[in-house]
Length: 211
Image (cartoon, rainbow, N blue to C red; front, side, top):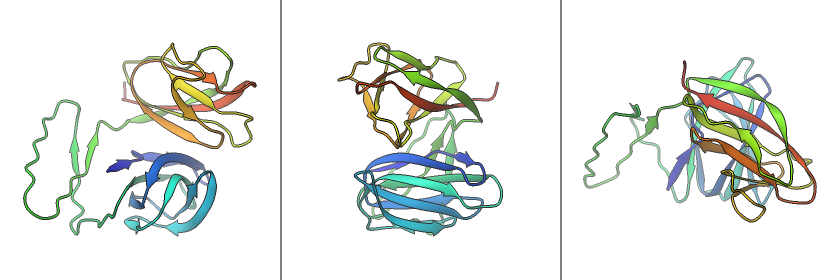
């Protein structure tokens, strides 16, 4: 099973944490320059690598990655991760489709790869930090042009948050722990509630379609 970070633009020196779930490989498909990748397991760093485009890190065991831009300019990065083994195809063919393009795949004998990028964001929108309390707090408003929302809980937070729709509670919704970043693919509103006894200030960013 494979997943990806989408196309992410990092400023010089910027870091971004991406929860991956249980994963065994990381393949850096796109990068304008050198990046530092840290692999985490149970919130602890287990490996650090300085890598460039088309680097494959196989046979690992991690659940979160941190990507840092070591390039001297803004760095556009896209990586894939998942369980099991991964051997990048020799031709590294990329198939790009939009929201309405039908995609038919006929699987034949032997190894088969397809990389589909479906409606990536055209631009990013920096949002002000918001404090999440003990009631459902709006962290990203609905928008027809919104494609993604990124939410990060700082490492020094006393507790994490739960994220979902307006019915989110301390026992219902996706939990983001301190030091973790979550990526949501939706155009609807997102709400969060603190998971513990203290308020949590989270950072946010949207990925939008160009207007």
